[in-house]
Structures are given as structure tokens and as C-alpha cells.
Length: 242
Image (tube, rainbow, N blue to C red; front, side, top):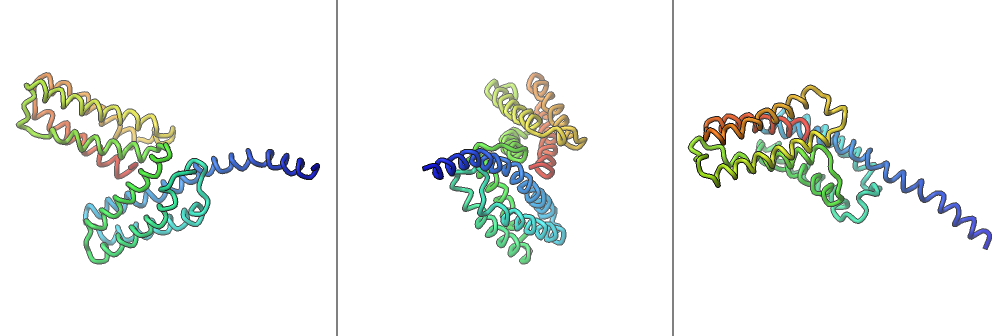
């Protein structure tokens, strides 16, 4: 009995430390995922511009970074992912997408390769969302989606005199502004102070500030110019932080 009590006491002492260690693993996991995501972003960018050679180099870096992450975390999930059915499937799924992207790249089907890598970005997003984890890359992805919806009003012939049209444009602008502000808040202090990040976030906010003027003056041409600026900022956010 004394031996059992002693064993239980040791377990109660060790368990909190073990749980804390698993919780700390999330920060390391997120850092490793960001390294992988960084290579993925750059590869997608090169594929979009048709630079197959540089995309291939970046894909190799992606593959190596993913191998390091898999070796550490495939069999040891951080506590935050307990009960998440997407976690176990992630490693085989991403490996399969990488093979597919490589085949498409070698056969010069650059857009298909890019789509495979964009799908990887979606896999990461879905995994974290299922566990209630939010990182800057996911917020930027939400911003991209909101910007896609906002771009539906990129029409110089848009009739802003119609109340329902003006209200829809204002709503889309507000939705995008809310997400941009959230991304600014989610970014860590180091990223938030980066000149590039500030240029993109503050530039987007400045452009959004012109939307009410475009609505009030019924100036569809101004709205068009604002949307083009916002799309540029949005694409750069995705390329650098998404």
C-alpha cells in the first residue's frame, strides 16, 4: 500500500510537468509550421510569376522543413490538438500534396503545382481552426477571403446612388477593415514593428478610409482605384505573412 501511495504521489507530481511540457510544444510546433509555411508562400509566389526554377528550389526547402517537423511532431502531438481528427491525417496529406506539386512542376503545369501548395495552406488553416488556434497566417487568409468578396464591387459602372449597393459596399469594407485590425492585433510585437508589415497594414487602413468618400460622392472610379490598392496590399500580405 505504501508503495502504491508513493507511486501515485510521483504521478501527481510528474503529471502537471508533463502537461506543461506538452503545452509548451505548441509554440515550437507553430514555429516549425511557420518555417514550412514561409517556404510554401515563396514557392506559390514563384509559381504565380512562372519562375519554375526558383519554385523548385523553394519546394525542396519546403520538403526538408516539413521532414524536420514530421520527425518531431508526427508521433507527438501538442496538447492543444488532443481530439483533433485532422492532426493524424495532416502528415500523410501534406506529403501527398508535395509529391503532386513536384510532379506538376516537373511537367511544367505550374498552375496545378501552385494549386497543390495553396491546398496545403488550407490544410494548415483547417487543422488550427478545428482546435481553436489562431495565428497571423490564418488571419491573413481570412483577410484574403474578405478581400475576394470586396472585389466583387470592382466595377467602374457600379451605381453607388442605389442605397442597397452603397450599403453592400460599406459592409464589405467594414468586414475587411475588421479583419485587418484583428491581424494587426494577432501579430507579435516583433512582426508588428516590422516596416514591411506596418506598410501593408497601415496602407490598407489608409485605403479603406477612402471608401466612405467614394460612397458619399457616388464615385465608382475612386472605389475602383481603392480596390486595386487594397488588392495589392492583400496579395503582399498573403505572400509575406499568409
